[in-house]
Image (cartoon, rainbow, N blue to C red; front, side):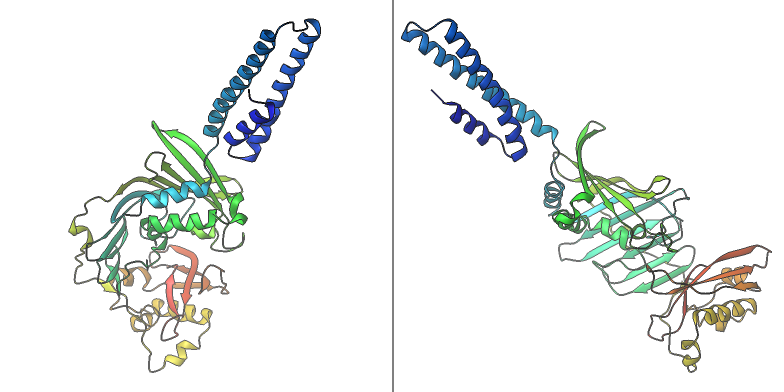
Length: 416
């Protein structure tokens, strides 16, 4: 016959965490105490007259204890199923699931502009489709490609090319695991194994525990495990780049994993604002280890493509190197107004000035050039400007300038 202490020990061994053990201990104590109290009352009223009755009471206690153990075990199993796995456990299993990944194909959509860089987001604009591929050949050759309607970047294993439609291109050396031309965020998703490893590392740090939430759901008939991660912005709330890039926004990253295979099934990003949340990114399909045609990693460009070049050191390089950001902006826009394209090329190092640029910026009227300012999320400067185009349209924007190049000269980096 098992004593009350033995029954308690059996239940405690069944429990796998402290909170559960304490709750079940209280339940057990209440039931056993109530049972013993009932037996004492019965003993006082009907004193046992034979050893057979004593044995009957002992068998009854043993049966009650056994029923309690079974009931508590069943309730524990139901309770355990209602508690989602820890984020670290889910991410660890998901990381293991993509260990043998040699190719991946992802379709997604993002709130952005079709021709703007891959990292730029816009809470006001509609979704733009993005398609991504990556594969590693038997010889270790890594190739990848990221497309959206007005821009693509391709690494064919030997070089990386950025093509901005209709006719602008940049070329750099091989980047098998580095994603240049602002394609790093999409690259993180293509490197799903490293992405999950990074999230796993953070999940295992106790100071980040409150940023991770988990759940178990059923989506379209599929059981999924959800890891929801809240990430603070890297820039201040009043920073110019706030909510223009994922890392410069307060946002949630939502990962949904197949509960059976542990593979990532979908990934979403929500930017958190004072007025609520805005979904700015979501995958629509993810294929693991699909065959990818060789044509995906080839790119034929026309002969009239404008190629970006590294700025050269000029004979009078000091003149431009010593300019302030505002002086550089004034000189650049003056060159456009006067259609001095040789001067223009000193701020936009390209193979030539295309006719589309000549038609767009040639003969502008400079209305005003404001005071430069910086953002903690950008290494260059922003210069406010207001110009009137040849067709009469007045444009107000911020010209992005940076001089972190070999010639140390200011180069236009955006905002035209």
